[in-house]
Image 1 (tube, rainbow, N blue to C red):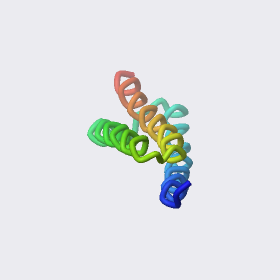
Image 2 (cartoon, helix red, strand yellow):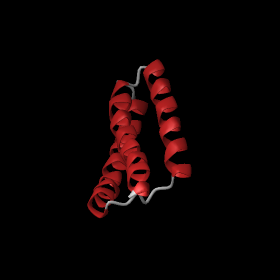
Image 3 (cartoon, helix red, strand yellow):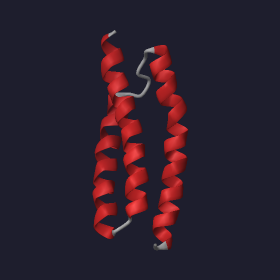
Image 4 (cartoon, rainbow, N blue to C red):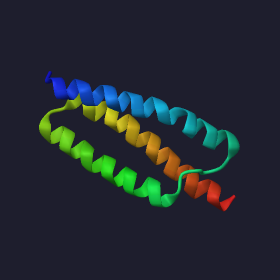
Length: 85
C-alpha cells in the first residue's frame, strides 16, 4: 500500500461521513437542497476520479470513493424526486 492511497482514503471517509447528515436531512424533510448545477458536475467528476484511482492501483481510495459517489448520487436523486413534490 502506498501512502497516497491511505491519505486519499482518510479524506474520502471524512467527506462521506460529512454527507450522511445532508442525505438523511433530505429524506427526512422530503426536499432536495443541493442544486442540480452542483450535484451533476460533482457526480461526473467523482466518477472520473474513480477511474483515475483504479488506473493508479489505489484500491482503498476507489472503494471509499464509490461510497462518496453514492452519497452524491443520493443527493442528486433527492433533488430530482423532491423537486416534483
